[in-house]
Length: 157
Image (tube, rainbow, N blue to C red):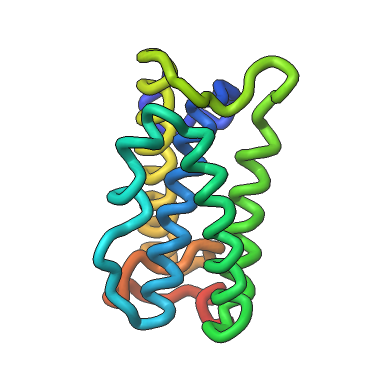
């Protein structure tokens, strides 16, 4: 285990937590781009169930993410954001070795801990990426976390 995002950790539960964090961030990015306020985030709604059964929540999240990505590409005119989120999800899911293990459906305690760790480390890594991009005025494929953060070159799509 590492104190920061571990890109070498191929544990399916850890990767599931990372994917869950990206899905939650995607939903919030769509909401911000649309100028809407969320009553409940994806993570707030599904975290408890995701820790216990990541497989069912990620399948539902992937189904919903299709609509979120379509909104970014279409009416919200943020195709760069849509591509970035789709690529991040693809990269995470591609690392899950289904011949060895797959996304847990009934997680044991160790898998639950890996899921939570992956979720929080992915969130922290995305936040650090946004902060660094804003401080150095460089581009990132992530949208800003809120309206009060400066935009970068990649935001103007």
